[in-house]
Length: 402
Image (tube, rainbow, N blue to C red):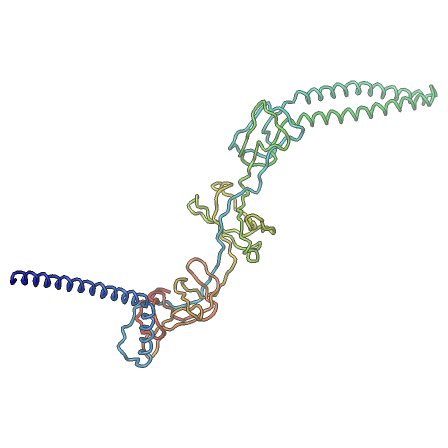
């Protein structure tokens, strides 16, 4: 009995220990869950607590200016008026003002000779192509033969008319004979003049077989060969005059009232080591493209052999300028419920103090923001370390160059 009782007691004790361990483990899990919930809540309230701390620091500084508050290190800059320009940045293309497609003056014809190749320089009036001239040469020969016969008849009629006049003056013959001789002479003169015009026309038609350049420039395209037919209106031969270039770009329609002829243009050519050319808007389109919702502008480019048509250009249109502007770095502009503001460094009671200043902004270009109101020349702005500053905070400075 004692042995059985001892065994039962051992079993009960073991069960008690097991139950105790289980309850301890369950309690630990509940405690861990509570701590995680509390941590999560504190993390969510972190931003609010930071704001409260900053407000309390400001209140303490206001109640006790001599309180030992560690000054924050900042960089400052004194404002001064300077010129400021705003540009519209676009991508454009270089184009030639004078581009001509060579075309025959007559009905065209089969090419019998090509005298140029792509890349050749040509002058105005230089022969580019030769067309088949067989038919026109025959017409010239026929016209010359015709006028030769008429000329012989005209000389004979002139001689007869002069003899009839002399006989009539000597009272030989009749007046009718003189009039008939004169009529025959005048008729042959008319035929001779008409034949002369036919020769001129035939020679002009023959000359149309010489296809010439309408402008001076460079042969950019030539897609015609001997034996092929060259017709009027074809675009098989193109001449480009690179001495007169222009830059062309499309401007979004929202800038329509800000761009006009005469505005300054800055043209940068990336493929020529960012070569920059200053020019002006010479032409402004007044029609909005319904697809791109933009209008075009053009500017004259000075002659330069290194610049070629269809070259990509970066175009900047100067749509706003001010000779006496106050500007600040864009990144120091902050926002609150009252609008945009910057932090100033102001000396108060012998100590440099941070003060908030609400501002009205103007144009922005690259890293500069124009300030229309709220700041004055000579104000000292905080350019670095402004994050987290509160009104009235004591600061130490590392001055930036103006």
